[in-house]
Length: 126
Length: 144
Image (cartoon, rainbow over all chains, first blue to last red; front, side, top):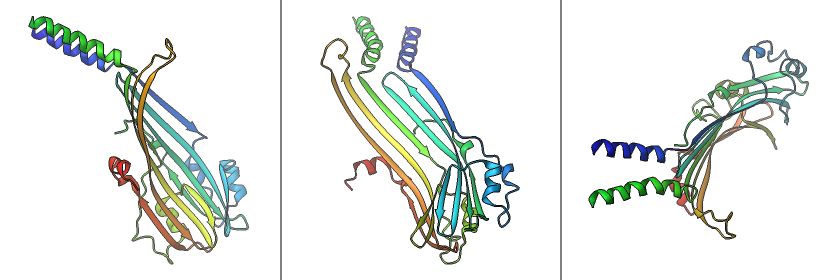
């Protein structure tokens, strides 16, 4: 009798947990390799040098004293779990950003780097 | 007699979830865009800190823009939560009418740091908002 109820409980859990799991990943643009940034030196490099190394920027922004070139890469990881009565869906998008600041003569003055795309992870929304 | 009622309960327990599948569903959806945002207020001094120092400290901003008298950098993280409860009987394929009741609530909360700079690249203002700390249910049930 005990084994029958154990079997029943196991089967019930199996029925309630039947469903499907989906894992998805979406990557935009090519990876940004930090080694590529080494030859780019503020005060020496120009906008043309940056474009030669990294290609066309994702965005160009006009600033009060020059321009900014934005290079952006995104990684999105999605997780979905569909059970009989409940479903959980989670998505995480992280970016690699490099923003170059140029003066009015297109001379590189500063740049900032944030490499977080690799930190995107699968998970649950709780 | 007792074993018969147990059997009925067991059969019901097996049949109810598949029968309800598609009729009652609860969905919890979550999403995050961007990394953690911090505001090191002790290291960001208006009138003193430079653009270069901010870029070293915080990395590349999510957005760059120009304002009237200078430039701004925006660091941002968005956190999405959605709950959805749906009750319905999907009869549309066999009968023209169907019954469907659903309720959902979505909330996007932003952590955002906005830094303003003079044309010379000196920090002229800063604003920080961390709304992801607000509890989901409290924010959803608030009138404001």
